[in-house]
Length: 246
Image 1: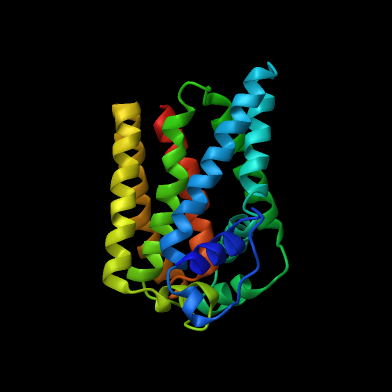
Image 2: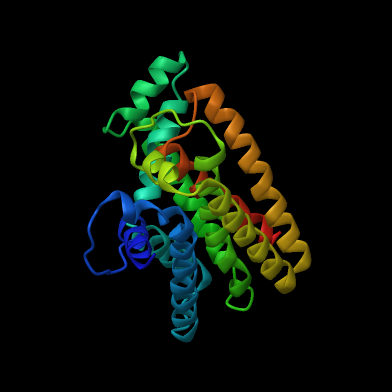
């Protein structure tokens, strides 16, 4: 279990971790611990927001710092998936063409533009989140990752040989899915306890985006993989934060 935790943090964050072996046994519970990477991310962002407030930085500058930290602490791995996926979705062509673009390591112009717009919107959303309401946003980073992991359990994989599929296939399905669903529920309860309206709206938005993501991934790519899961995670985080602040 501990090695799976280390593997999860080593794979999905830049938080320093001890070295561990990369084997099938250590992959078994990686997706279980994936949401805890989100918890660490949320806590780091809360600390950053606190320090920015103590330094009397204006809300816009604070928002840009929080946006940068949210990307850097995870090593940009999910933004990479976002860029690859939006680039593929921009192709007005058949599924084979979109899949070819998705696997292409080069960054297209549409990916660059959409990534820039995404970061602007995320910075703006963070700038609206004052220090007082920020604790209610921390579960966003847990829920988005729990749902991303659940998508790898419930939705068809486009590539069974990929890393994300490997983590999903190694996980005990029933127990893993139940635990991840509980994390979503607990996260939603915490958000609602902090702000009932914002919490409910954010949670409903996340669940709706999860359903729509599953349908669109199957239609456009024939399934999900690590890139599309990263795309979903980034989109879910943005819309959940915006919904919470409405």
